Length: 371
Image (cartoon, rainbow, N blue to C red; front, top):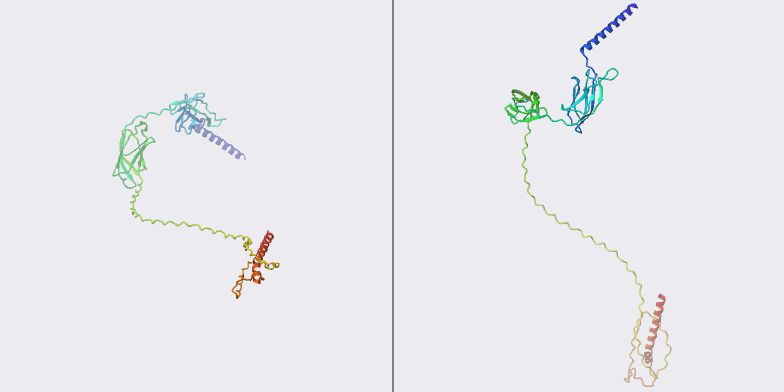
């Protein structure tokens, strides 16, 4: 039991020693400190939000350390590290735009205490610059000449293929000479700040795997450029002759007869029966009475003639037979008795007058009954 306790104590002492040695080794190797501050905020230049890509640099006055650089985006900056720096607590922190203009807003540097406070510290701080930076004037440089051999796939490209060179994002030129795979081109960006920047080569839009640094005034030969195989050009289609169409006489369409609307037959009107009027009796002229001779006998009362529909035709009176003595109807002896024929002839007009009167009265009575 005692042996186990002793072994445990020995192991504990050994562990404490290992930890102490490790701590000393870490201090000797100098682990990076997290005692710095990350700044972020808006950036205003000449009263307007800053353009994208402007460079902002932070510097602690009186210290050579703790300097970092970021660029603006959407009118803001983020993750601008300030510190750690020792012995400069309370000094100003300056913010410089494009290494030309110092911000009118300044901060005070304080070394973060990573004991009670989290590290690294974070701070929001807006920057204001009174004026916009001036674009630097490029220093002129001498042109350079590059030449060598070009291979596209396994063959040399056609001499008419376009060759382009680019230096950074500010210079590009297309041209030079290309003959049987040999190329030669002049590069003249007229900017000494591009010295040492890689030159990129493009053949028909394809980028070469090789680059060479820009050297003002240099003549560089034996540059080998390799590209992928160029696409096979598609032959232009030969236009097919289109036969000229012979105009065909278009028959004139016959006018379509407009149908004449048929008259709708009017309905047959049923005539309204007109009441038949009873014809008025025609007045018959009364014959002039023939004077009766004084010797005539008295006329007996006339029997009323029955009403008939039509006027009976007058029956001609038979002529009196002449006497053997040659006398006519009126050849009776004067003062002698009248014959029957003479009396009938005298009574005929009277009978006719009576009949007409009776017809008139009958017609008037019929009209009264109808009304």
